[in-house]
Image (cartoon, rainbow, N blue to C red):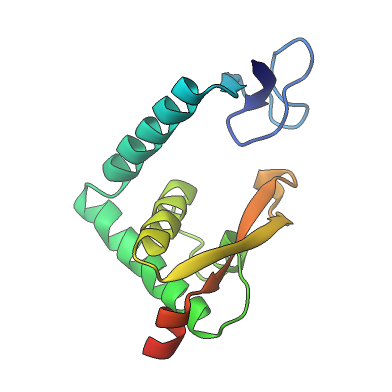
Length: 140
């Protein structure tokens, strides 16, 4: 069953499918609710994460983002990717997303909810809210 069509940054497309009202991005795919598409999406995500951090520059950027995530995680307070933006204004959003995924896989952070983004480029899209895991807080 197909749900809604979305722009590349997560905003719902206009009914005619020509993009979102703000940026006019083209459709990047349809959100589907069947298991095969979800597995395929996870596989594409994982390949994208690997590609993003494969180059020396991507590895460097990811290590810088991971350091910032560790810093925020050590406080024990909830945080989002928007909280990193002032610290990492020259790092691409794809690297920030990859670093959050790496941090979660390494059990440095744990999801605690969702919030609305305050970043103009996100157009009020949803963000995951994270908190440092108990192990990460003890290590700091």
